Length: 150
Image 1 (cartoon, rainbow, N blue to C red):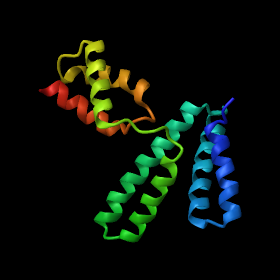
Image 2: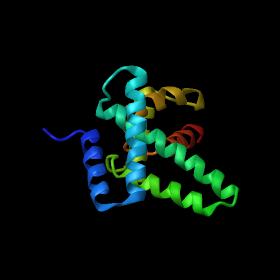
Image 3: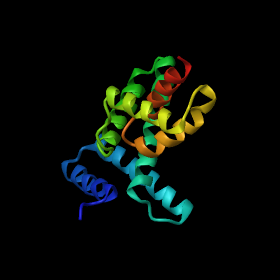
Image 4: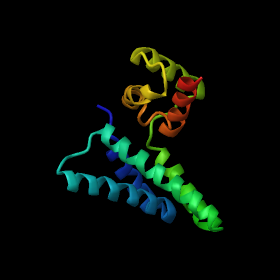
């Protein structure tokens, strides 16, 4: 049996401690804290799919922070957030290429029988289940919009 994502994160934390990699260790501790918070809040043990959802949410939060830091002329803080994104992304499955995303979008539109922008919710519902963790959902959403509008 393969190790769960959480097991991998814990092992990486131990490795970072031994190597005294402060930035990496801090980012990994943030990940573990977010996972623990969700487990405590919902009184559950997270599955790998739920862990991927938490990691994607963390990446989205950091991307939002980066744009705010850049707008506030704080490149030092933006760089720190970008570094955390790289560490978090290491635990996500390989990201799909632009072509693979377009193929998935086309298939979902056909499957949902979508004809206009009103059907976007149905299409995104299908895609979220298939692509969560494998693609940036904001990119997927943009591609769905483009396809449905024209």
